[in-house]
Length: 188
Image (cartoon, rainbow, N blue to C red; front, side, top):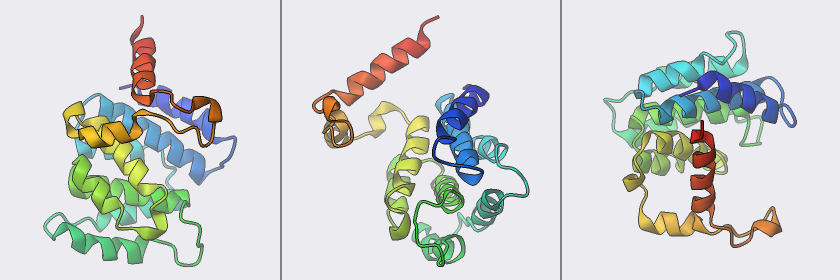
């Protein structure tokens, strides 16, 4: 539950490959995950995330537009084409544009009220953004979830790193590594 500290670290990391919207998205996501881990409600997580988005920015406009379209009284799947038509940029083909990706992440999070399974499945309904939105949604919803929400098959699937990007990590137990990191963070 330290959103400011999380945002500062995210900004430092994001600036190496991003600017403006990309950095703001990283800060907002880090802050949101931080407060989600502390057990706050969905609306507060969204509010904290929005507080890191400059008012006159593309990402701020995209997030507000996406959130305003979230109609929880509709069947969940009806929201996918509406969000896709409004939020997904049809000119810029790269699916990981931060304003689009983060807007969809928060909209899905809101529509599903942070339900991990439902949110991850819904996130996969945005083909153009399938390389990023499911991961972001999973991280945000996972931060609000108890471990029991993660199925054993999923845990087995992510437990051993394959070493694709960093060959030296092949075979490392990812879940044990996360537990070690949590222990380091929790030390006084």
